[in-house]
Image 1 (cartoon, rainbow, N blue to C red):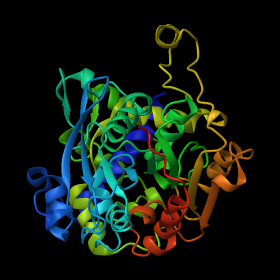
Image 2: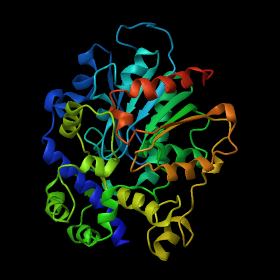
Image 3: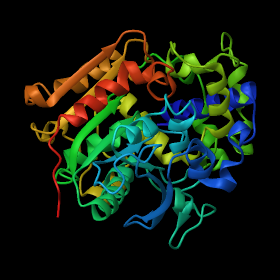
Length: 408
């Protein structure tokens, strides 16, 4: 267990080093997002309407959402538009979708194409650090993994958007945003609310990922360091993580000035100024437990709920010695699903994606679209300068083929 916790820390520590190399602090050109919020700092400045919204989950977390109800020029104002939820991956927040120009940012492109866009921000990130009874200084605030994101967070966001729009909802997830949707659907959640699903750089299996930090973690003792430091919040820009960044950089052959491709793969199409903006505003906090849970996928090669690594605790939580599995074959075969993955992605490796695709071999042929882009890596899907032509236009065309259904 310690080894895989070590793997998780390596990922986070690497992000810290990246931040230190390309420029630290928050705000950058975007201008104090912490003070302004995502709408003011990254959406309305481009001439779009944007609303800051709060949604409370059943387990008490108060999430920040941004709603972009129409395109830049207000075309079709007053017309009921199909809603779409856009969900980021791990160690980032909704701002990560908005760092390029409006013509290259997925949420704004969706708005200009007639969608009612809702950007979600996961618990623990800078605008979703509130709870009905807890605060981020409490250990219990960080007692969650992606299990809770699938069981509580996505349903809360979907319920709110459904109530506000009265329509079935399109969904776009990247990285961890794909995993929590797959897990939620496999347990029968959201199936009556979702119209279609877009999965970019999908992760469900991680056994074959080629990220260089995984090999380094095999030699590390960072699992013990985590436990001794008592880290419950993984804050990549916090002092606790900085303590072992030097330890990471001391390993032979580890280039701390070129870790982005080492972590995510050789991204083909990033703008260097956008990468700097990204590192000004990201990475974001997550829970230690969340990273450990992801590492368990690497260890076991199967998709299960969090393994408490003890018979008593698993029995207490699940009534079983081993944690229950997520059966992705339970996902409805007639659900419209768009999947896009890249040949250079070190996190969403081709072999692991093929394992995922095995679950869809009986899916309705006309409801499944699979796209493979040979030269794309993990971050290209969010910040690639050509992502609109390569990914977003086919995705939007896929969404527009679906018949839109009113819920009420």
